[in-house]
Length: 265
Image (cartoon, rainbow, N blue to C red):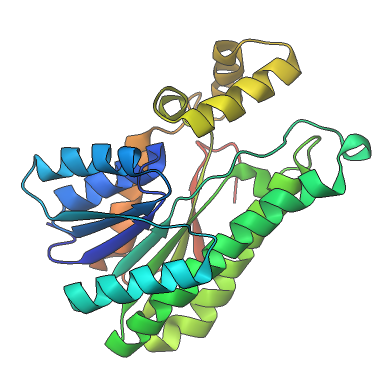
């Protein structure tokens, strides 16, 4: 198993991506610590993991609250003997599809401030423990919007670009301590619309603004990639496993491109 006895903390562990990665990490032998705002969602993922016989714990944590995250991280590290992997899969519903001329400052700032804040808080909290251990992997999430020119995604664009920039900077700063930082950049995931209310609401809103159905939007997005398909939750979770494992031990400061070629690096 690629992650045997590794301690993995996942913020947003009750969401579609967070849950999929948690299950994949557990399958590869990791001890899972799920954190998020909604215990019912966390418990559903934890139930799946427990059924396989793997270790899993849940905690209600506001990933925008620095003190709350620090308290949770310290408790996990104390109980488990350290933290090896962290993934921030927290999502926020925000305005998309509005042209720049009509976008309010508040709607622009919200995703930028929220996504940057939560990734900063969680990375800082776990890095303190990883530095002591001399190893660790910090995983972040982005989307192809980080490289798109719009229109209608100004706040989301700046937020995703900021996450990728933060990941690169952290890789350079924390590398000497044995800590690797990898960003996973995924395109739209159709399964997420079925499993996660946050993703579903966002996808539906964008489809409505485009005057098409959700199915038409997803089909169009798939046909717009060189592979003629969109990524799956398995694509993302399996990549996360690889990046968190020693098999990717020489990789840091990079973006794993899971856009089916929609964005070409």
